[in-house]
Length: 336
Figure (cartoon, rainbow, N blue to C red):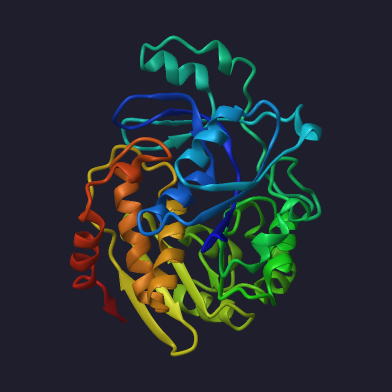
C-alpha cells in the first residue's frame, strides 16, 4: 500500500547533549527523522527518502520499519562509505546550540568522551558553488518509482542541487503538495536567481526568519514583503519560522496574513523543532487544505518535540494531547 506522505532528508548517527534530559550518544538522528516525528503526531503513513553509507546501522532501518515507516526509499550507497555520517549537537546552559569543540562540551559536563566520536569534525556548510552535492543527500535517481504517486512530499534541508532534482522529480505528477525547507547555506542574494527556478515547483516554502532575512539582505526589512516576493515565483504558501516567537503565515491566493504564537512548552531538547514543525505542517495541510490550520498542526508538533529528547520524542506523547493543544492554539492565532 502506497504511503500518504513522503519526506526526503538526511539521516545521521547522532551524538546529542541536550539542554535537559539524558544525553543520547550514537542514536538515530538527522532532519529526516525529526520531520517524520512531527508528521507522525498526526499520521504515520510516511515513506522515508534518504541516502546512507554502510556505517549506518542496518538494525536502525529495520526498527524504522517495525515502527510502521516505509523504508524502501532509504538507499545504502557504498560509494559514500568514506563520508562521515555522524553528527554532534550540544546545548549550553543558555540553550545556545553548538556543533563544534565536542571534547570541551563533554568535559564541561564531566562526561567521558566517547571513543566512537574520535576524529569527528563538523561539516563545512559554506556554499561556494550550487552545483556541489553532498554524498549523503537523498538523490532523485534512487527514489523508488512507486513513490512518485505519493500526494504529499516534504523536502528537508540539504544541498541545493539535490533539492532541485527532488522537486523536479515530483512536480507535475499527482502531488497535491510539495513543501521545501531551504538549507541556510544558499539563502543568499547571489543565489536568488537559481532559487527562483526551483520555487516554481514548490507549493509551500518554509524558511526560518534568519534565512529569509539573509536572502533579502540589503533589499528589505519587511518579512511580509519578502513573503510576497517569494510567492511571485510559485509557492502558494510561505511560512516564516521564528523559533520561540512562532510563525508568520502568508497565503498568496487570498493575500491573507496570520501570526501564530509558539505553544508554550518546557524545553528539554530543541533539536529538530523546525523539522518537526514542517512534518506537522504537511500532515495538517493534508487534513484541512488550509494554510493556517496546517501551521497550527506544525506548531503543536514542534511543541511536543521540544518536550522530549531525540528524534522519536513526539511518539511518546499522551493520547489526545496533540488535539487538545491544537484546540487551544486556534484561539491564539490571529490574522494580521
